[in-house]
Image (cartoon, rainbow, N blue to C red; front, side, top):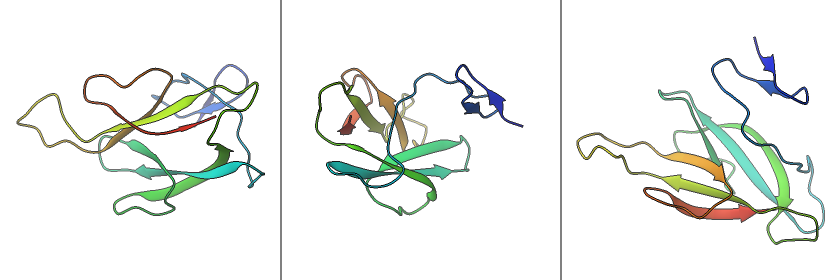
Length: 113
């Protein structure tokens, strides 16, 4: 069963809410479609991209957001890595939404506002 975080947002058991943002459910002028996909292979991961399908990932949902800044918007950076801290360990694609510059193993993929 899902729990509710502050503001009534649903959160899966074992997960915690670390950020939230407003987005459009349908296309609006100046927005781009951002697809969220999931991989149930351990560890559970999410993927953020412009492509509706990607090998090994199942569509979860999509939203629309600005891809350039508008007054009153905040910059969200989608970052990814395909590397592991352990050179002996095979790395799986990992994605995150972050506010700052990429560091360590992370690289920028795209921004949305």
